[in-house]
Amino acid sequence: MATPTARPFLKWAGGKAQLLDAFTLRVPEELNEGTLSVFVEPFMGGGAVYFHFNSIFRFRECHLFDINEELVLAYSVVKNDVSSLIDDLSDISDEFLSKDDAGRKEYYYAMRDTFNREREGIDFRQYGEGWVERAAQLIFLNKTCFNGLYRVNSRGGFNVPFGRYASPGILHEGVLRADSAALRNTTVHLGDFTLSESCIAEDTFVYFDPPYRPLNRTSSFTQYSKNRFSDEEQRRLAAFYTRCDARGARLMLSNSDPKNIDQDDVFFDDLYAGYHIDRVPARRAINCDGTKRGEIREIIVTNYAPHGPSGR
Image (cartoon, rainbow, N blue to C red; front, side, top):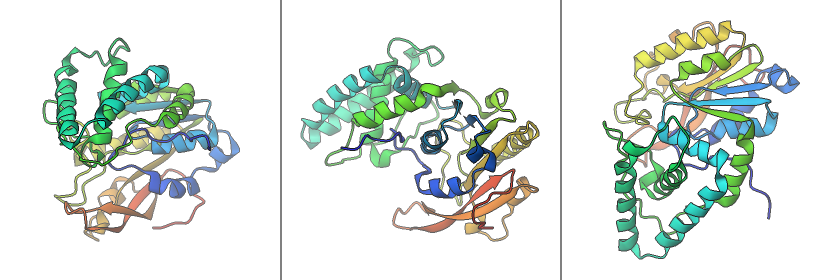
């Protein structure tokens, strides 16, 4: 059996697995030459791009940032205590899968209630007792909730309903161990994307994957934390992108393309005027009706001339 490669251990909205080839075609020459030894991702998310690039380019160090406390906690546990996490997930998986449909549903909601009730007792700034158990709970909920969503209410409570899968894969030991090994050269930070600036210099490659700008009112990629990522936040990010450019780093950013809906919508063209903007195909749902999926375009913004095919 082949050894699993590092890849996301959580399902995550807006995952970039389908765009990895497009990103790889557009990396800066310095990355292939080995002169960019630091990788920074100010919006960690599910980590598909990080795991992919870190396995190819073997950075000296990586820095991942995210505002989602639960996500940072889970990554930290995978890095620091993966064996204990696997033991906890094995127990949870065995107990859950031994139940009938009604029992599984009851178990899920009991776990969700416990997860939300115990949130106030977790110190998300200091690794400590209870982190392994909480990471196991998050992974379980992620693998068994509806559509693998991560959604919280205004108080930060996880509120996704039960998913009713016949045989959900709750524990993927090989993936977790591969991810733990990949994270050895990586520091995981809790906080706003602007905190990454101190890690960014001329030897740095930065990939930005912000919460996507909704294509329409029923297509929202921003229910990621209790804080919404508005157009004003997109503008704040563009200003930060310019500051990072001034530090001499190589930058890549992806987002939804508003021209999928309105050809006259030049929101991102204006925000990133002066940089390189490619438009690439992707499959996304652009309607609340999950059957209405199709090939649309997303944008890739770089502060260098990419050598891959241009989709502008």
